[in-house]
Image (cartoon, rainbow, N blue to C red; front, side):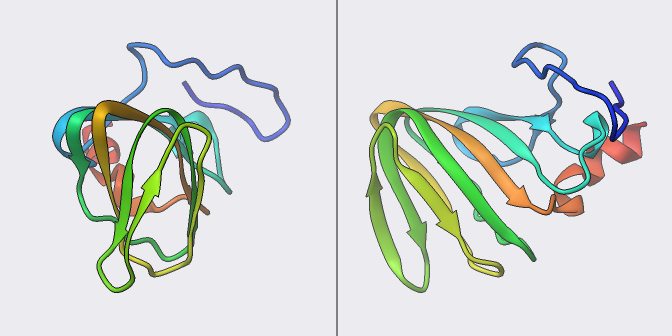
Length: 129
């Protein structure tokens, strides 16, 4: 699906969302809003982490923002330590900061991503196109 800057799109979490290699263990990440949907300034990903699931370490040139939709866990900045997360938490990651999300016993569902989008996250998708 491609969009134009002057049109409204309704984005849904479904089987058409491309998978992203952002989960190291116990879960899945997909792109909801990304250049493939016509986005130029923002990205939004959906992470579904199982109990103890963990993302790969990420670091982006721009900032990133995440919302914990459900569950709990933590976010770790290797240079600054680990902070707990609960349902409703918002996380702002400054440009160039490394981070990893880890789900707690009940798992964790996150929505968010870097802004502007990080082209490196979609390289595997553009090669296949």
